[in-house]
Length: 267
Image 1 (cartoon, rainbow, N blue to C red):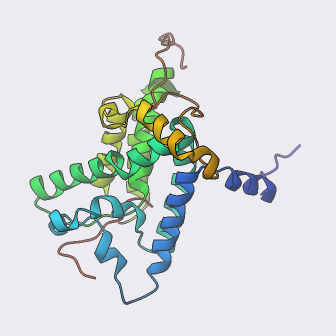
Image 2: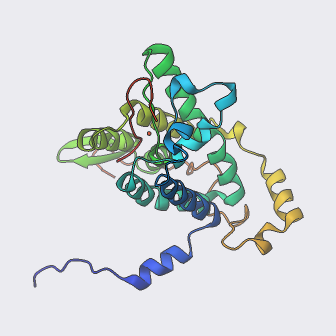
């Protein structure tokens, strides 16, 4: 019998959309909102919120948080949204809405931006602006790469065994080669922060679970907010690191005008 292609199932898509957790919904809606705002000419969204090295100062620190929400056109926004949604909703389901919001408004946005600014402005003396939600995509891929490595250190391609932690780097090379005007440096910084997060070294920046639980109880967030994921509903550990397992055998394979150019983060 000839193989059949998988068919589009509206009911399955509707079911998936309905179960997207709260913070993921907010981020996706903000990306759509900023894309819609690009159609008006009174306010240049990209010039206002992109991560432009020479434009970042004490008065424009908001750029460290706005650049992932701004995209260069419909296709850029669409592809980044499709890539981000499953990764972010899984992270929120694993860690809870409050911690996810704290980390993605905080270090998982600002640290990749700081690393990019340090290298682009401090070492390369450039001023390439970046924007796009793929900063979060590659952060999450980096964290997932560490999780996969802990569970299964290698995968096989023919007779070669490749460490699973390298898969985000392979995705980075693939995207850079196939999609024009993407920022290799921006994505590389994101993967690096994702690795650090996956290894648990950023846990000191996460709010204590006791405080999160107190806030949830005091404000009754679970009862008041639809699609909210409580800290006690999370699926896995807080930092995305699976418990260490026995490694397989050697034979088992188990981102107006800018100074400089503008690149986007993501396809």
